[in-house]
Image 1 (cartoon, rainbow over the protein chains, first blue to last red):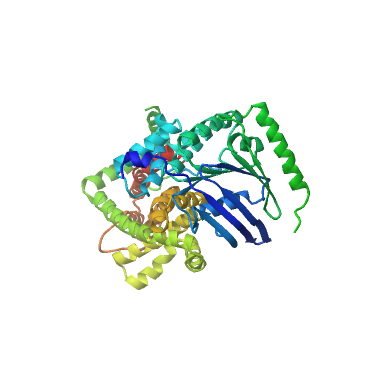
Image 2 (image 1 turned 60 degrees about the horizontal axis):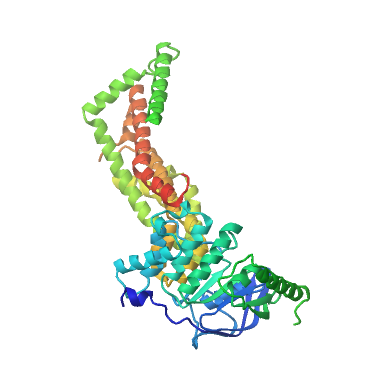
Amino acid sequence: MNLVTELANPPPAKLHINGVSKTFTTQRGSVHALDKATLTVSEGEFVCLVGPSGCGKSTLLNLIAGLDTFDSGTVQMDGQPVTGPGRERMMMFQEHALFPWLDVMGNVLFSLNLKPGLNKQEHVEVAKYYLQLVGLERFMHANIHELSGGMKQRVALARALAPNPRVLLMDEPFAALDAMTREQLYVDLQKICKAREKTVIFVTHNVREAVCLGNRVVLFSPNPGRIREEFIVNLPRPRDINDPALAGMAGEITKALKGHTAKPAEE
Amino acid sequence: MKRLLLASLFFIGLILIWHFIVVAEIWSPVLLPGPASVGSYLWAAATDGSLAEASWVTMKRLMIGYLIGCVIGLPLGMLTARSKTLNDTLGVLALGLQTLPSVCWVPLALLWFGQSESAMLFVVIMGTLWSVLIAVDNGVRNLPPIYTRAARTMGSNGFHTLRHVILPASMPYVISGMKQGWAFAWRSLMAAEIYVTLLTGYGLGHLLHFGRELNAMDQVIGIMLIIVLIGLLADKVLFSPWERFLHRRWGLNG
């Protein structure tokens, strides 16, 4: 393997989630987090999962990541069952989850060092490429605590992209950022997704964000967590979050979402 | 530079106050010798080699005992934090024994090991081990689970996670645990040395003890100053570089 093949885009993966249920048992009783969720994500699609807290969208993401186990159903990537975490499916969290004992470069290298096939020098080259992609090559040697919230998420994105996964899982990665930073990240994320073809599943509770980023928006409702409705977003790219057409569609979806959460799901 | 100047002024001021109290003869000079007589004792002890020798004996005991305590305490603390069974057994034992002032180990150590270096070492190890274990346990227990989750998605597991995530992530706690262990080891060794006379070597605690027996207050105060000085130096030399690193990298205070 060399740098050129390493940086080439692998074909994005197809995901098939079929009738997946998950119940958490806590001290206060059991929570039916996800009820028979079925979802197919095609190669290179950007799907946004939207819903109020407790609707199972993050649970589903963790199941796809292989971080949690599910009670019934199947999760498949390209026909292969998902049994645990894997470099093919990288995850980004709401907390940046960067390691404070490493500098920016060290954090990006962490995921690369676990990947066989390249030597140290090539790892550094790959890391530099991704830091450049997220616009932070000048901050290579900065410590994590010296970065702003938006920069931290950029590093986290670079770290997730570095092993060149075929699926990118994002769990409300921009929820804790201020509006200005977020808007810039929408622009950049669209650019990055164009450059690095990935299948992306993006969890958010912000409908406008979902419409801005996704090819498809999937609505969830809580108690128990269920998939209720899907919207295809056909707006031209790159999209601007302040575009009136986008806002109109977001309004429509928000209305649908309210409808689903108001009436209790029939058992 | 300004800080150094300020500190120097402060300590010179203290010595001057001390001097004037002695000159005023409020207390008998037998009970409170002046800085000059303490200084001349220290000078004499330094030139005849007894001070260096006692410091060396004490530091050797401290270092060996402390290192053994850390080497046992660090991994055990990691284990009690990760295993419920170990936490319910060893963890409870450690918590209990940590509350025991380490000087309480001296009688037991004497009966077990006699008046020997082993007894000293045992007391220092007991002083270090439990507090290091508990500090590390606390640190590892309070690690944000997001670190290990993130590491797992990147393909890290088992020993790799321990070595590259849990160990470095708990470093602030490990350092503060080791610092606390050091303080306990130092205290327990002084107590043991004052308590027990050893023929295999006189440490600083022994000099302090002899000072009392001889009613030599200049020796008592002089040795106390040396003990304080060693404590300060250890803090600056052993722990400050680590704390500065943590501060720079993590952005932590302290």
